[in-house]
Length: 138
Image 1 (cartoon, helix red, strand yellow):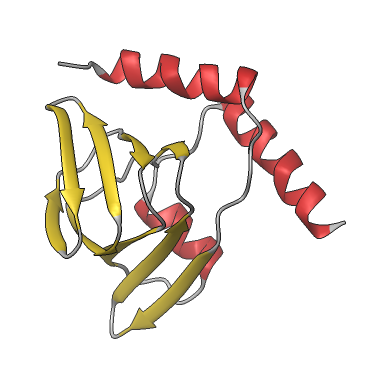
Image 2: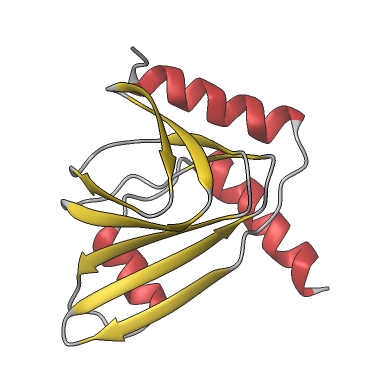
């Protein structure tokens, strides 16, 4: 089984050795619920955010292998995957994938929702992803 430290090492290797990209995300707010639909292209390696609360994931489309502290699991859509707070995940999408997380959330905009539901990224990861976002905007 992988530890959280193993997943953090993988995240470091991704940042240090692979081309980073900002994956498209659709955001939905409704009556203290916040859903994020992450669009993951085939053949993408990624790590997820660490969430502050338990939540539910919906695999709407695709075939993805996920590494967590509980081991490796492969999911094929459609699937519903409960998640506990504090879990750090890594994945590999075999096909184009849509992964939706649904959270209880008081916030009504993306920035406030991020602050409410996810732990901050480690500084070097946040810096690398901010650079990717700036490159996408240019």
